[in-house]
Length: 395
Image 1 (cartoon, rainbow, N blue to C red):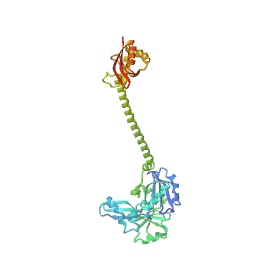
Image 2: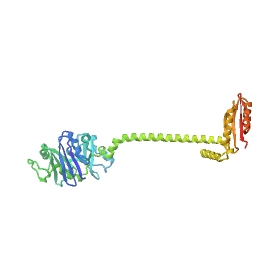
Image 3: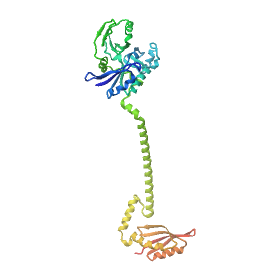
């Protein structure tokens, strides 16, 4: 990593917060400082910017243990890890968050933190708008000591002590002498800050410029991360998905309803088109009953009209209709029910109705002066006389 923001939280909300912005490429401190408490973490939001945020938590809140499993590490044995600590801890094993630090065959190195403490740290960061990329115990970031040494560093009012690859402790300054006297045998203490003058021990001193700088320099080699299981960090795109999931789902539903409506409307219009096509075909067959094959009634009707327009005027449909039209209004008491034209026979068929036969015969006689007129299919029903009048041009 190039630049990152390193934050060391406290155990309690009122504890001092240490922070540092580190450039890995330049191997230098860009900025550093302290905050009075977790309430001021929002002041680091601007410092974070697009930089990754690495969070250290006090090793005194973490239980480090080496456990021997009844078999190889798998999903089933992992679930049993908290209960293997029941005899060694005072808290409820079910309330522990377990992180596996290392394992080889049946030997497992674990770090355990109470769920409540993990939730508390993460809530402080969330309230400040900070998203931790990695969260790990501070003592495991100290330089790894030799086999006969411990690494030690004073940070504020506490001493961080790393005893081995996976073991460490955090002791308040006021309790350091008591804690050291309780140890059966002390190895060489490799301190990176000035050791307390009142403590007699075998010291090896390598002073660092800033305590948090020393930890920042060690971070690239440390892959431990307590953000596992239920506390697994969520990637940025997943966070954005959580934020936009409901609007996206609602938009998808709206789009689905729109497409469904469009599909229904398409099928409705298609059925309507089929009905119109059937009606056009039926009308065409009525107008031209002699034609047996109707494929495209619109195009076929257009062909008929073109044929009529190109036919000789004296035999054309239009001329005969023009001759017939003036005769019909003169026929009082006659109702025209239907008019059809047979292009092949060049004749009109008029379905007419009148009060009696004499009225229809009068119409036939009237038309006979211009056309050849013939009355057929005479019927008398309900006090009305109907028949079909066939009219042809005399030419």
